[in-house]
Image (spheres, rainbow, N blue to C red):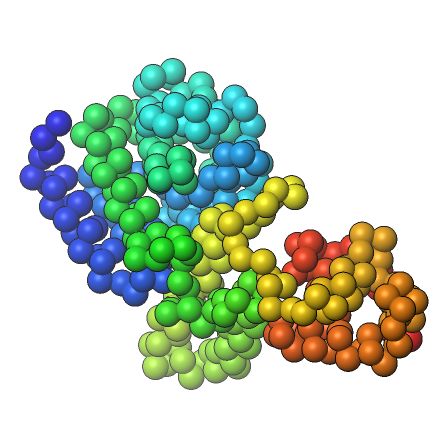
Length: 333
């Protein structure tokens, strides 16, 4: 369907904004998408989510409700809501199709009031459903066919920006977020550790601002500094949740990311396998007995493996291999 001039202007502006930002700055891409939809319809709640249909897993890197950003995260979606319907049909969902029945079965966010209108469109990649873009309004009848068409076009632009120019379809966040840089040594573990460090640094900056409240208030710069810090927090959230939503393995299913232990020697792999055993780390003496080698040799292999993987402690190996903690570590002898 032909689009009206105001809608075309909003889409062109969003497209320009998305292509002006650094390739890894997913938050600004999401923000530009929301601004475009809000320019053509009254939007009270807006979200962008990434979907792992095989695991019924959905990750929300961007949530905006009633003028403020919300905390992002991941969850499992049920078989009877909007996400499952879109995953099966690959079609946009409109509130008017069922008077909001599917919408109101799903997870709610924002205020406690039920939305009066909504539109949710799919982001379809080469391998099927990649994500969804949702807009909700307290005003009935605002998401017309033209708005849904515009949102569908924006979904394609967002998908292109998130996955563009990368043969491995991996998001290069290091251009904007060096704390999330993945050089292949420890993947998600390094991303989590560096994100934690970035957030700790921001917390320290907030403490510094608190100590200078009066001075900054007199300068008139306090609000701007606080707003910049708040946005930065949500930018890091969006970046890490986008990465998790695209590449994380869920509930034991394999994904396409490279083997994190690829650079280890066969003997180092044997040692790491015992350290990360589901029954717990047997300690250097136990590993030595199992592999018929000396404890000094075990320590050498552990130290070498940690160095190659960019880790500091053997307990971090379990997070790298299994994605979470296991039984308590035994003493290292």
